[in-house]
Image (cartoon, rainbow, N blue to C red; front, side, top):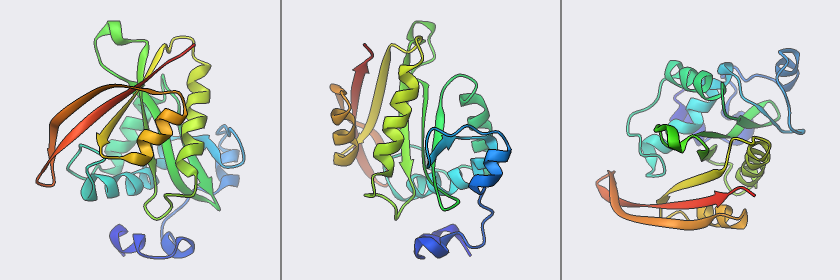
Length: 198
């Protein structure tokens, strides 16, 4: 069954033929949990993360990538990111339903104290508060890092839910760029929201 077909199934059946890392198993691996549902990601989560992410790559303008990402590629991204920044996942009933991470905003060394946030929730599970919980958990982790001075939210517009989530957590709109992306035969605006840590 393709992952497109699985998205149409009820949540309790959607991953019947996918190897999901159960909570007990990841605890035995020594992975750290923030609370009952949120834990830190490991490379073995790549297949589940790819399944979530590729829906947005192939069906929306939320991600500016246009080609599906392989499990191998995502595993490499995870390994690289978690060396320095938090990457967390929301797990319920053994299923990974969403994830959030921070990454370097820009490569030049003077930007080293600024990060960019990323949050994705499995299609069909949006609206349950998973994104909000992940975002709050990510901000909590970033607040512990004294090297992080500013957090950027880079949002393809329109995206009212993401804008509202950022603004409710103290982000202020810093910039609006018109028609800087082109995907799915349309021009896309991008907004920057910024939070300077106290």
